[in-house]
Image 1 (cartoon, helix red, strand yellow):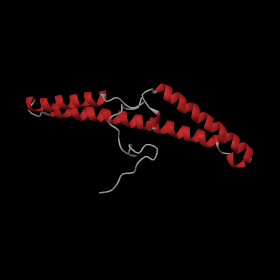
Image 2: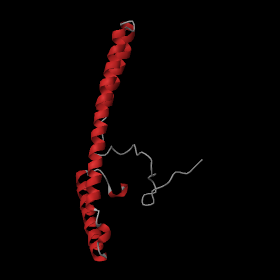
Image 3: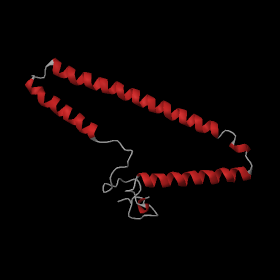
Image 4: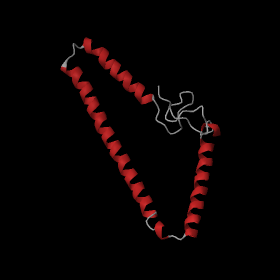
Length: 135
């Protein structure tokens, strides 16, 4: 039996595991669409014997899955394009970082730490359920 890695700051919390006691993060996807999809598939499966598994019955599910596949394809492409643009923008901002002096690098590091602290504060205010010990 292998031991799972433990978070050093909070030993009760395993790293890489899902905590089912806490609610999902604020930005996570809702499970409503999954339930709707499950109901549609259940209705389709239950109507199979009623329609004697006709060609129309098969065509309905094939058409639906094709449409969903194309929509997901476009969604994934859009997400990848936005990700690529964000990476390019970040790379452009950091192109000349190796030419900075030590003082300029220290100032940049301080400003990034300040920005990260502000981000953590805003995140904590936006998600009041998250406790500091859970991080």
